Length: 163
Image (cartoon, rainbow, N blue to C red; front, top):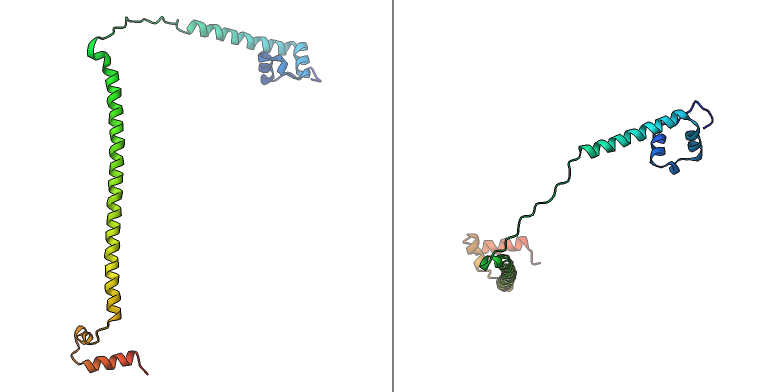
């Protein structure tokens, strides 16, 4: 610091309390020569010391643990945790095995259903192909409701001329 009028700010004083080696050389020189900054540092140190003392006085005393004598049950009750663990493992294994069967069964059912639908579709397509190859011209007037077959033939020639 060049002037005696410039003093350390609060952050620099706190850093000097925590670790003086963390300060720059000029700040350390100012702190060693300036009595006002030294008083600020001493005041913060005193406040921290009194705070630590008050914390020790205010903190409750540590309690001693009270241990009750452990009573070991005899007979079947001593095996209860082992039985519970074994039962849980058995139920877990059974659940995994059962879900595996369900997945397999539902997968097989789905495959069978898809195969059945495919067969039905093949039969339908075969029937459609058979109807495409064999065109019953005699049935068309009956389906359309026209009793005059010549009218139907004339209509077909109008729609699709053969010439």
